[in-house]
Each structure stands twice: as C-alpha cells, then as structure tokens.
Amino acid sequence: MSLVKQAFPNYDDVLPMLEGFEDVSYKNDVCPSISKELAVDGRLMLYCDYKNKYKREDREGLRYCLSLELSMLMCNSKILLCSNDIMEVKNFIENHTLADFINMPSFDYKENIKFY
Image (cartoon, rainbow, N blue to C red; front, side, top):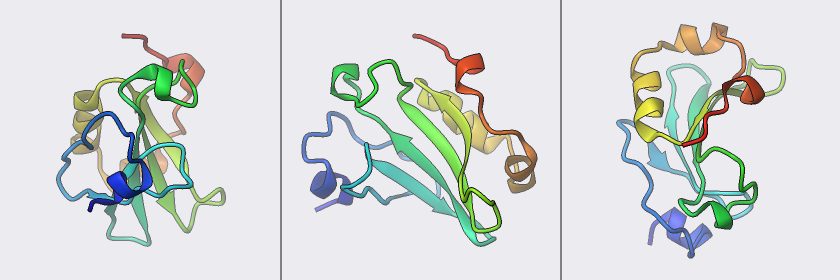
C-alpha cells in the first residue's frame, strides 16, 4: 500500500507524477506530499492538498505548495511556490536550478495568490 493511502485513506485524488519525486506522505502532516532528494543535503517537497477545497484544513489555501528543505537554511524550509495548477508547479521546477531555488526569496502568499 502506498504511503498516501496509509496516511490519508480519504485523499480524493492521485499524487502528481513528477520526475524524481516519490511519495513521502506522513500522517501528522496536513496533506500528502512527494519529495525529490537533491545533490546537496536537502530536498524539494511538494505538498498536495485535497482536490475538494472543503476537505482542506484551509479552504482558501492553494492546492500545491513547493518548498526547499536544506539543512543550511536557518529555518530549515523555504516556500518556493504555491499554486492550484500542477503544470505551473512542474514548469517552475523544470525552469529553475538548485542555485535559483537557494537564492530566490520565499514565496509571498499574499502577493501571489491566484484564485481559479
């Protein structure tokens, strides 16, 4: 059984299939997640909230949230992008390097929110 089904038996969609990412869903998180290990001591994490916004902890929240987790970051995690569009997330990942991710500012949720 997949981790997402063990941790979130009522999850209402399938996790996106992104190259190099694997299911790392954990029952104490708000929603399922997938991650990609990086060449450095860290990973990209993509949290995938419920398709039905009424099942989400934050009904106004965006569905996908991509973060960079590196041990060298003081806060250990930096949000890179949040979106309701998985293709936007995929294109974002494909068009940026690790150096870009490290050097870019954290995603400003209030400035960048898009409702679909």
